[in-house]
Amino acid sequence: MVEGSIYIVLHFPKDFPNGINQKTEVISSLVGKATFNIFTFPDGHFQLIVQENGKIYSEFESQKVRFLSDSDCIITYIWSASQKKFEINKHCIGTILTKEVLVIPNENPAQDFNQIIDVPSSDYSTAKWEKWRNERFINLSRTIKPDRREKSELEQVGELNDVTQTLEHNYNDWLSGKEYLIINLLSLLRSLLCHKIIEKNFNHITYNPLLFRVAAFKSQSLPIYAMPVNTQIPKNILDISDNTLYHIIVNEATIERKSKVQIVMDFQEWINGEVIITFKDRNPIYYSVNDLLLESSNTIGGSHFDPDIPIKVDFLKNLSSFDMNLIKRIVSNTVQVSIFISKYLISLY
Image 1 (cartoon, rainbow, N blue to C red):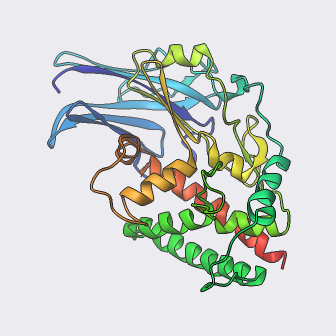
Image 2 (cartoon, rainbow, N blue to C red):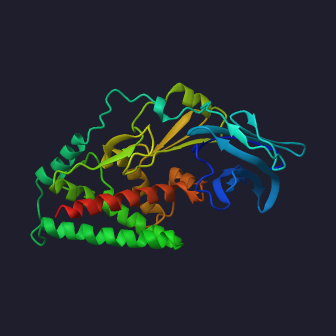
Image 3 (tube, one colour):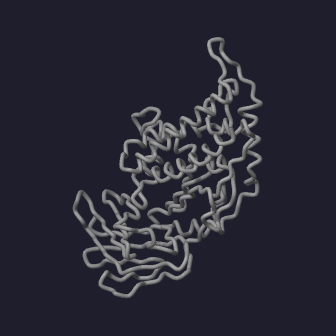
């Protein structure tokens, strides 16, 4: 791609580049047949590369950059044979030869979720999910076939303990570089978490997730922190998505509050809410952990391998942010929270 332009919205923390200890890929995305990469370095400067089949069509190394606030920023890169132009929020970024450090002020043109208005029917109380789990796993009568027996509560807690240890062991090995273990993580998370909110036939429950089942035994709430889910997207966010390559919002769950825009909600609320929202030409596409785990484990391993792959899963699989594709990023976040909650539930026995 000899010439072109890219507009993309990315989030940068105000303590950037704190935590960047080596050359780190901020994002990698396909632009037509070419690949667009942004890298950052411990000193806070950026490297932008557009390449196709190993041939670099454009490369730009910037001056050092800092941010005054946590916010989404509009990244613009325009290149041709005669020019290279890199902007953050309309501020022109100089080359690496520029010695001054450029500070991006608190303009927040890509407004964050602290301005998103909740849908009036939204209810973030953990009580509704305690009730759901109680109705699904405790009160719902089940017919046991003559050649089967029902497991005791303690047996199921023992299984949760075994799965949690296996999940933690596989996760640590995965982090050490054994990438193939993503298959195990997807399979284990599916068994712990995946479910259908409404079943067509309550005499035959399709999914019976172990973590939520054990939580029901103790009528236990599962509070976590996250940005609001199931929300309306304000016009100013859609305006920003005009002409952008992608605008990506990732809503990660935490055990402790990490941001002022996070609220308390049940873990199951987050599982079923939009954890990733991508925008392109004013069209928001939503991804939930529940859907991602089911579709990913069915198509890229864990449960079985389909001969085709959902477009949404393929898109996230090929879009990386900070050295990790978005599926792996959400899987990693979900594993961490699941391990913490599972250990807490086990400790109640």
